[in-house]
Length: 180
Image (cartoon, one colour):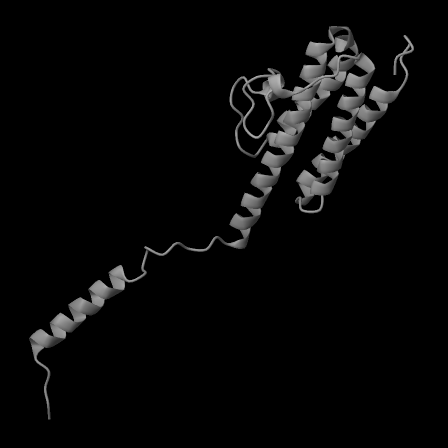
């Protein structure tokens, strides 16, 4: 009968303990669970949705800057879009102070275009058409995002998309001055 010495057993035990501590213990990243994946997906959706509305807010600012005579007509719609930016971003990544979400056209995070890079047509009617196209595209984007949004956020997106459709109508409706 072969006997194993006491020192051999202790050495084998120590080696096994060390191997257990170093081979994949806490060094391997754990996979996120379903709740973590859902939270990450919602945060990404919130960021995309807020950025989409932030881009639209910049377009309002560009048209108002290029055509100050339209400011009174566009101000309520712009204020509504600013509220959408804030509501869509809540619960997601925090916005930097002075960003478009707070009403300033500068300082918005990437990938939002800069106010300086938005080309506004010289003709006010053409500028309104350009803005209307952007409003519709934003509403369409929010509508498409409904497919992957969790229920509470989907309700918010649906409301913002419906508001965008109303804005598009208001931008194309004739005004008292005859300009539509």
